[in-house]
Length: 388
Image 1: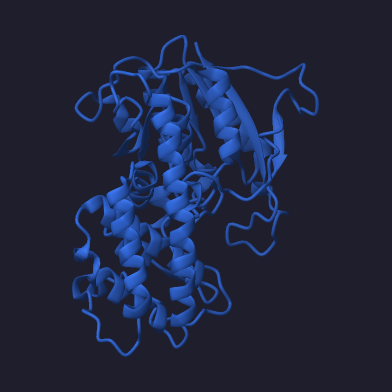
Image 2: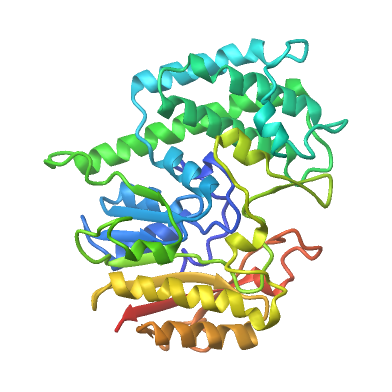
């Protein structure tokens, strides 16, 4: 219950590599994995987002799998769960120090014509944002100096984090000089987190024959596609499915940054070198304006049927979910879970529960709405189910 109500900023290990929307607390993931699983059990997050579940599973000695249909989520999760050697860290740091003199506006960048023609730089070439865009172009063009893709992806994630700081939901944008300074600060934080995660995983692996047993698998799949062995074959049923699915009727921009008010940019995909090409409803089970959210609940039924099929009687499903209209959406959500053979476990004897479930308020949640922390989606409920 303490972890559910944890409102401290997301930090520790590699969790701060990127601010993915609708993240849940690492302490919640850590406690849940500890309570519901044992060493070497399988933990699966079908909507892995920024990979919080996978990072915590790694340091606790659990095997983990994550899937997401957002290529940006897959990129971030892979960067956060990679093991970086001392050689990798040295090369990354050397690149960061060189960038302090290279990322200057009088340098002519190699313009990414293909990305530009597909609109991936939309709304980041304005009067106050073009210095950030140009700095990113210079930085990305220099990635070939790094020895391998793992090092390059770490730096791409560093650029992603710093560009998000500079552009997303800001009224005033920093200068190119401030961008370079923040790049250095973020690099120090990320390297410290990567080294700490490596240390924790090495302690867990010590004495085990299979040193790769706790390396997470991050797959670019919709949750319902995990059912097919050609995509992934589970060695045994997952002991825990821990996730936060798309919220019914709630507007969340998983695939865009917001620039100067209502303008949106797909620039994160250019920085991460992965393709988007889909509208907002693609990432949220359907358009929230569609009648009775029929598309959402149809997609939900398909995904949770697949989760039921890969589970067994020992599989737990633990979720944090928010609703735009919980009075009618929560009963339907629970009904579909029951149809998919998940039996709810209520917390009748736990203090501070409502209707046998634990609710929490997320402070300052806005999801691009005008009322911070006062929307229906700022309340999340903990749902615990057992595969029946």
